[in-house]
Length: 391
Length: 102
Image (cartoon, rainbow over all chains, first blue to last red; front, side, top):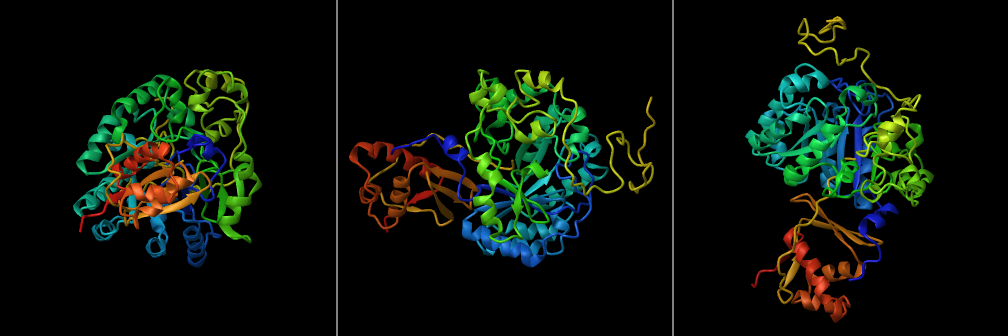
């Protein structure tokens, strides 16, 4: 068998269809997580209709996209959500959807357990209510745990518990793994990005340099059955490569379709600079994927820029494009969390960072200072949980 | 990026003289470098790293043995060991299965 180029090299030049397609069905969400990568909250009135969504699924079937990662917002709040899931699986497009668990009742769980073509990912950002609810909102831990219990009771094995690793929860990795064992689920941990509202809390939430080392060591020692969405490849510069593609897949093997049909290079890059087209235009998604100038650009060999001379460049390949962009770093320079410390040094001279013009946040925001239970059951009260500064 | 690509475990010995078939829950997508395989049951992704390997996999169902499938795909003898390893990896991740003797 002749292998002209290693697979990673092949992928750099793009594929006829994405391997991993994230599709955010709605910007509507019942929660207001402080680090939401898509600044979700309120529904966009231009959201794709049921028929438009089905047309996208038809295209994905023709392109042989094996499965889509459906997210949001909270995708299950769309009234046609289950109809779209059924339509996708009937058309040979598997579905993995991310949810905060709000709609995963015992009945829904029983239905999900019967399908081989639907996978569920419950978002949880703390192994305890205290840590989780500080970023995802009061009551969100209980909601997620109830959903997990319902899935486990229905016999759904191997659903995913999806954790964004933060400074506050990195010490709970073993506890997350135990939680996954308890529900016969699989742990999935991914990297925090400074995207969407994540930019507002990045400085407080992203793991410290010591914690990154801790995380890397944990992944090497315990990570065998832990999914990472390939998102920690910047840590490969510590030494051994982590399992998976150690490569930024944006526009090459990965992309995002947002709720209004806009196609971005990656789920963490909702910004006009990374907008490749819209599925509503002539030629649909297929044309965007195969012909957009932006994607063609991303598929050209990239220069390492400032990183080129670094001994670790082959391992980390400069890290995450979105993380660089939204922290104001040049795309051909180091990742803000570069384990060699080059990112930190580069950040010292950054004066400003670009911000997405899209923001569907609820008008009442959850803030990181709101770490206490609300003064009333209704956390819509703007003063709920308010802790005066200086305490 | 929300992408989980599995890496394959080391392949055990693969019986070239047995009859094999593609798992019924596996879909194939041809690509310039070969193909992508996706298993809807265990949700794993595999890569066929050459078009000829794709040909060989496609021949499996109709061939009396994997050795014959490789021959029909035009695999040179010198490369048979490499193909055996690749097919073993696919068997280990249940992308292909041995056909029962019946």
